[in-house]
Every structure is written in C-alpha cells, then in structure tokens.
Length: 169
Image 1 (cartoon, rainbow, N blue to C red):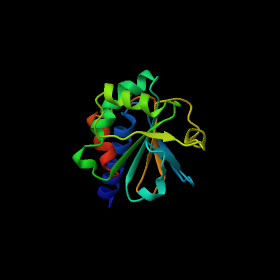
Image 2: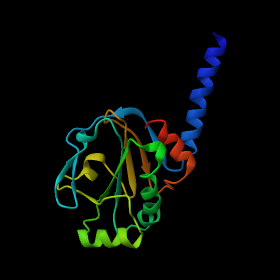
Image 3: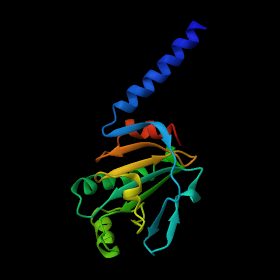
Image 4: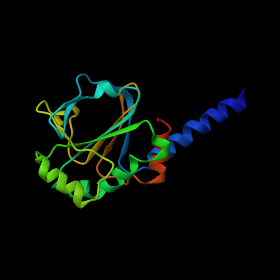
C-alpha cells in the first residue's frame, strides 16, 4: 500500500513538474465550460465548437500585425501533423480585424500548409474568453471543457509540450 501511494505521488509530481516547465502554459485549477462558442471560417460560415466534442481542441488567437504570432505560427502549423496528436483540431482564429486577403498572405509568407484560417465572429470569442493579448491559445479537452491556456507565444514544436499535450489526445 505504501508503495502505491509513493507511486501515485511520483506520477502526479512528474506531471506537475513537466507542465510547469513549459513556458507560458497555465493549467486551470477547475475545468471551464462555455456555451455557444462560434467563429467563422474563410467563407464566412459559422463554426460551432460543440460539433468537435470528442476531439482535443486548440484555439489560437492571432493577428497579422502581431510579431509573436508570426514567430509561433510555423510551429503551430507543424503541430497539426504530429502523429501522436491525431485527435487534435487546431483553429487559428484571426482577431486582428484583418481581411481574408491579408490573412492568406500572412499564411503564404510563413509557408503555412496544414492550417485553415478562421475569424472571430461579431459576438467575439476574444471578449467571451477575456483575452488580454495575443497570441493566446486555449486548450479544450474531449468533453469541450477548457483545461489550459498558453498566454503569449510558445514553440509548439517543443517536445516537452507535444508530450504533455499527447496525454490528453
């Protein structure tokens, strides 16, 4: 019995250390539930996040004028193709009021191949989530509950981050 308690302690401790070693990652103490999370695709069609329950979801809020967004976007593009993250759906949502043409040029200049462009809806997710700046990424578990945020830029190609995220896939 003592061995089991020590083992559980070590497992939880290693998880906490691993997550705390990831720059700008904030793990929620309590899961957060939101209603009516919608945004727009590049054809102005409404996307409802509840349609993606059962998947690990990463919403990344960005703008073309944001230098840290430009820096992290290529690694976010690579994250979409990680084999051990096959249940991950990434939605990069432009909140900078950029038009489609400027957004496409941004993706083209950065050679983004695996991601689609999405836009914040007039209801604005940015307000609903209380974003203080960009880039910000919000991560939802398979039940559609927010369990973590990345406040600021991050290297999404960092193996520590990929391994941590894969635990939720």
